[in-house]
Length: 104
Image (cartoon, rainbow, N blue to C red; front, side):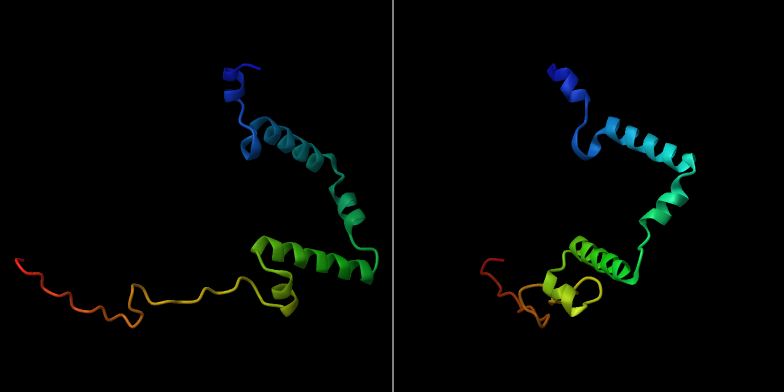
């Protein structure tokens, strides 16, 4: 592969050829009429499986939000809120009056 060929192909998250192929396969599957059957096949078969699926989904969502396992177990809803701090060096918002410099 020459350097000009490798530069023309974008790899990683911007791999256009793979994205085009994926989109084509998704479109074909959606038009095939097999979506309803696939949804039925993926559905939980009993209450235990349904509970396991819910727990797995909650864990996945917690990972996406960046929560630790401890935060997840506490049941904390959503993201943790950042600690608010007053801007600047002096948190009370009172900046001291600058001293006058001689000659100014």
